[in-house]
Image (cartoon, rainbow, N blue to C red; front, top):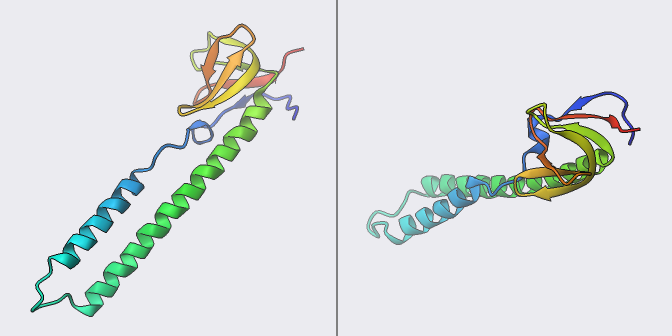
Length: 135
């Protein structure tokens, strides 16, 4: 993919997928629901409409967790496609001082890391500029 214009990487494209707090909230919600069901007063059980509302909330939380996992995989795929497009191009770090031709790109927990021909590593993120391939 040859692009002759200078491109700035948007912040969202370079952020690495991280463990979402939703998975912790999901586990907490399950524990709370089970504890509530175990400790309810048998002489005054939970109202059926309240119980159905809690089950609906449980379903929504579960679907949100699954959707977040799928979005994380989409972001990883996008980052890998972006990595391929960086090899051989000139990249300048956000500080404007470090610059060079990208020899390889690594996907780490902090996002894409461009390794220049001289071994210098630049984390691809906001403020990083990518120019056309060096001639």
